[in-house]
Structures are given as structure tokens and as C-alpha cells.
Length: 337
Image (tube, rainbow, N blue to C red; front, top):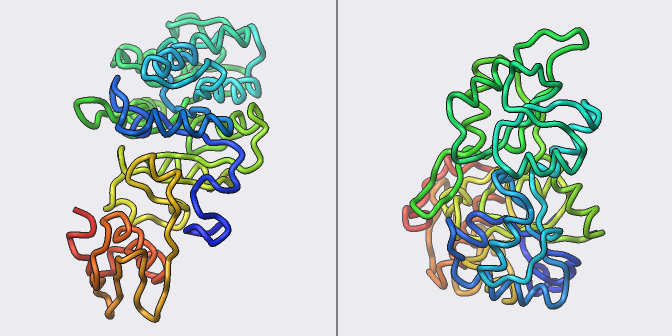
């Protein structure tokens, strides 16, 4: 998988048969749409399937789709792939339909459990057959304690299965960056001393569900997080596009390890339709558009500014292909501030 577009792939959409987009930080932040996201995704949907892959387990697919329609997207519930849906695949391997499942989280989990024929409880005293944990804004100590109590229960056939919808450490909201489900899972892990099975990004179950549902052979994943969207896409063998409207910014891109490096970097989703510039190497220098950077020993130097996004692309290519980590180099603050 190449880092940047080649001559036969002039835009990020060339050769793609479906587009899968993250939601938080890509389509919206809080309740409001991010600039250009709705128009761009509706334009893509006119020529190929567009679906939304979300780790957020607090809402059902129908609720998410209704929100997207309010924002102006042409979307139906089956266009939304949620981490609770992926969790059902994992749950089927450890508990048969009809089993009692302790839910830590919101309606997104409950709806999928009921669709799959499971019974739901909120109390460890009911001796649940499994625990499914996901994000909801009202999850607090009492709910985390219930998960801990259930997971410590003794069973003849082994430990109570524990499935986490996802392990995102943070979640972007209108007021800023807030703790995500990963922090809540970590609290339970600290109490019980073991880790859950994980359904959502960057693990493969959620990508498998999406690819199967849309029969996608060459999809493009759009994300704002390197450790979930981009890493997961690379594990699934998909192309990936990182948009600078959410969690991870230039600083994280410059420092990205090989498994978290996207194929494309854009400022916003208008970049889906723009010819992606070639990366030109000349000795120790890299040029993207009019932007030029070079490596002098351990010092990354800006030779010519060009467009800010091209300067970032050039710097990423230079650092990623240098064989060194960003921490071993002297990088001008202007490249990541």
C-alpha cells in the first residue's frame, strides 16, 4: 500500500468502490456538521456507496441515521455500521441467543442485543452470561462497579465473557476533547485484572461487518484518528484518508508509526475530489506542489513553504521515509503547531 497517490490515482476516490467514514471529527463535532463534510459526502454518494463506521456505542443505527439526515446527508439506518453491531459477532462466539447480557452503556448496545435475541440486564446480581461495555455519557462509577462484580463471578465453564465495543481513549465533542470508552474500560480492567475482546476500530470485526454489508472490495476509509481509523483500515487492507478536522493533527501525523500512516492527508473533505499531488524525491529533498523540505543530518529544514497542506504532506513523506522517528530529528515548530 503506497503512502501517496500515483499517476493512475489522481484523486483519493479513484479506484474506490465504497467510502466508509468515521463520524466524530469527520462528519460532525458534537451535534453540528463540520465544514464541507455534508456536501462532499452527498456528492460521493451520487456515484458509489457511502457508509458510516462509528465506535460510539451510545446510539442506535437508526438514531445516528436520523441525526445525519438532520445535518443534510442522504442516509438510512443500514448505512450506519456501529461497534455494537460488530460486538454481536464476537458475542455470538461466546454466548448463544437467549443468554443474559449485562449492558454497560446506552441504547446502541441494547437495540443490537434485542435484535440478536439476547436478554438484557443492568445488574450483576442477575448472574449474567456475558458483559458488553460501551460508551454512554451517563456511565459512571455505579455502572462500572456492576461490570466489575459480574466479571469477578465464579463460573464452572470459565470467566464471564467481556466484550468492549471499542477502546477510544478520547471523544471529540462541541466543547473540546472528552474521555472516551477506553478510559471506562481501563477502569474495569484495573478492577478485574483482565482485558476484554474488542469489536470496534482498530480491531477488524467492525471492518468485516462493513465490507460484507456493502460487498466492498476496494473501499476508502476516512478518519481523524490514527490509532483507530487509520490503523484499522491498514489492518483490513483498505486505503485510508486522514482529515484534519478532528483528533489527530499535524503533530501526530509527523510522528505516525508505519502501521498508522494514511495514504492521503486532506484539510477537509473537499480534498476527496482534488487531484492528489505527487511526492517528488531529489536526494535529501522532498517536494509536494510548491512546498519543499530537506533533511540536513538530523535537522528537517523548510526550503519553500507552498500550501500549508502540501508542506505537511512533504514533511510527513520526508520523516516517514527517513528511517528515523520524529523524536530523533529536529523538526521546526511551524510544521506541527
